[in-house]
Image (cartoon, rainbow, N blue to C red; front, side):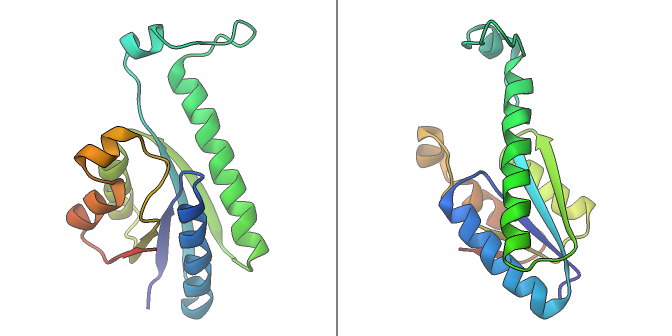
Length: 145
């Protein structure tokens, strides 16, 4: 039915619930499972105002990429514990909804399975959630958990 399933994750409980459902779908369809964490790119001004640890003077983007990598690794382990096979993890920087939809097109994903509310900030509350934006922009079906 679906050759490829995409699960965007952000470390939230809703994302992990979506992952659990995606693993069940994968087991029924024999699909390949893609796990994606998107971190928001920070401008040089935002990075200059951030609180960086003196012992690890990374840019804000480096810190966000490292965290996103940890989120993906945790999600891959959780998927494997639930019985998932053929799982690949990805980390991308950019605007979350656009990056998720672009990745889905690039990888010819059959369905996107994602949480209804993640770890977004007040901007998400005021401007609309990432999941809402993805449902409006995606060419493939989107399942919101």
